[in-house]
Image (tube, rainbow, N blue to C red; front, side):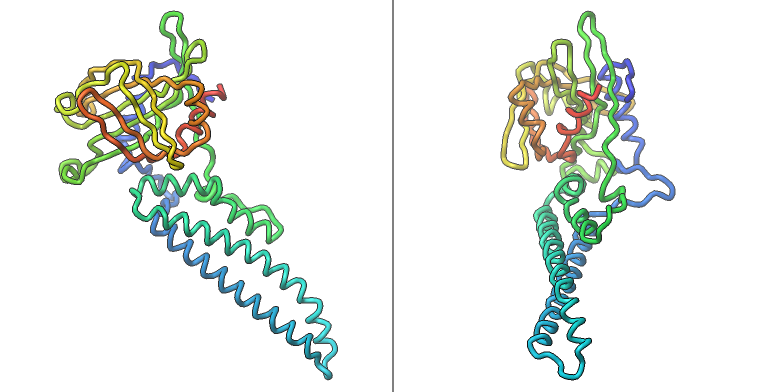
Length: 323
């Protein structure tokens, strides 16, 4: 656990600089495996399901052959009949194991197909989340059937996200913040040719807990145009942030930090910061649900964005309380 005495704004700018230094938000490490694309995950899931289904069919054919042989015992080969009797229970056990694996593979394939029209970033985040949770059942089931613990695959079973906290003191008030994390990036298709190496709007988020247990969601939005104030306006106290979850639940948080926005020459973008209060009821929901979209409200407009980090709140609440 790291404790660094920094303001949220400085942490936010550090995170921004680090992410902008990456190529397409992907860290390239020499010799490191390249993360799989959605298409690769889908193709592997199809092959896995087909291969297991074929094994199940072959096993059932073998069971049927042995049952037929036992109904018509061989007069000339008693040893062969005995082998059939011994192998039949083993084959039926194998059949049950394969049925469970085929069902798990079918369920995983269905989950992937549901993501077909999602943005690539959101799909990969959902795949990672599912594999860490329900999707991992398939891998575990296969290993259990083989009678051993599965070897760790850092892609299928990634380690927990590093937890870094920063401490901040403002007079008598003390607070700690989780490290800002990329929540989403968005560029309208009409603007893509003007922003080939970055998104038009990028959003970073972190959680904070102040003296007295008050918890907030801190958002930092980076808009890559000097016209941002004219287009979007400003963040006002009392503006809403609407959180949309995968199960259809919707939560509204209220901003308590007005912000006109400021131009940052280093990133050639306007920076807006919002601070949204999380009440006890909202916290209970955020801790257990996967985030799908957010609707951000400025003084002039409000826009809806697809989220990359579906388990953002689950991870950040855990980190916030670990300190």
